[in-house]
Image (cartoon, rainbow, N blue to C red):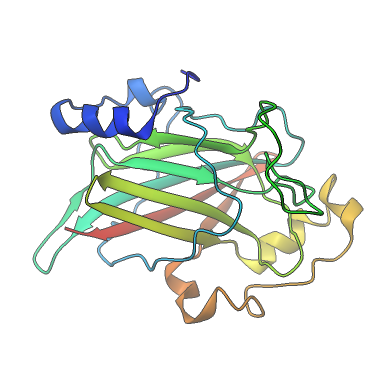
Length: 228
């Protein structure tokens, strides 16, 4: 399941084959209705940022043993038109984010330079949406780094012609709870919130996770709409 697969191979497969939920790790253990509200509005785009690279890793669990509070993210995708809102099946969904110390895999925190290929791919991976337009990832709650609110990056690519790049943000009350707990509390207070992050802007209502507590961790849900 963690074998490198290129984007081109996935897009070629999507052109002629229906990808089942089991094939992309969305089977056992998934909530029956992970996102109750359909994505009948278009999701705003956000910048990709400097810390992306294509791992080619098709997987549900992207943790790779990084310490942190467990987080399950659940997305429901839809194609949105003026007259309909249909599940978006077979879309490639890539996720990546910083670890509890605010570090992205493959990058040096101080210099922002891509390290040599040492196998550092934690908190990165992709899946393909199932027949209900759903994907899930198992990960940890992201840490903070200077100048940014707490966020997860996403690329949603239904086909070769359409691509949405965006970022989703967390409620400040949940952030406050997380950063008071280990291992996040060792870093001190974060310097940027949703309100002070210049990249968030007025789109926060459409880019905010709905977060609920689940045991020692959290479940974050969001519905994403793309133009048909």
